[in-house]
Length: 429
Image (cartoon, rainbow, N blue to C red; front, side, top):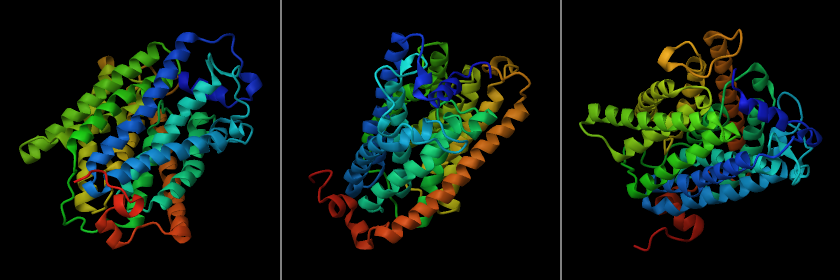
């Protein structure tokens, strides 16, 4: 690959601290990644929190906000303790080591390329925060708060950290040449598969699918969606780890795909129901964002347009199929939007990264690499990430269920998690 900035950066991040010294710090690059880090944290707090919060029923709004907030705290401390070390320290092909426990090797002078390692570690922390937070949408309105905290913490360490090492920390998928610029497999496939696994293990909410369960506050959801859209620029463009043309192109294609995904989802609804919905528009936007994520550093504007259109169409139909045909209560559509979108974008990266597609050309594949050979690597990356996530997530859910129980009682679910889990209300009605 002609431009593999991310791969190069994470490779050197896996080296011992003594090898991380750079000729000099880039103030411009450091300032941009500091900004991108704040943008990605904003995606969870308050972006995802408001997006999810508006989608649940009024009796569960506070529980969703609390789950996202608490996951942010737990994930941050686990990343400090051992998560960063397992993901980015020198280890083997499958997992990093313990050389950076408590970020002990991170000093003011240690560098990743031409930015401080502290900035790189914090940037990666925000990814480790939002990924388990996304899974909340799969079991919303029915999991105990204590179970959610336990599961999320364990999942971060035994699913997210190893797969991050595989892809970005110099692991086996990185060695194969997987194209995943900002998290198609690491974030979206893992979160989507974990969410649908949780939904199947726990079973549907009482009343699903016969009882309508509409969003209680679309104003809140659209506000959260807008924060996600803006924050995603830090997510994708920040993954260039530099203030350069790669970051600029990643930002441009991210925006194009989001717009195309939203309009395509609206068109699908308009065709089927005679009118578009606000919920469909924002869901299509998220589908476009999630699908472009793995390809954002490799494709051009034309490719991004096609990816966004396909994201809206494919994720829309996946959502309908999962809920209406399979009757799986993935409450907030995490798998059909993030899981399917992340997998689709990872596969399409192999196609639209090619330099031989005219107006739809990307940055170009490496010497001797064809679309088909790259596509084979992409398929392996998606399947390996998905299967590993499904198996380990299932085991973790069963373990937590045995330890403390996963689900609230039917009476507690009817009352709402705000009162029985937190003894508070989201609104004074």
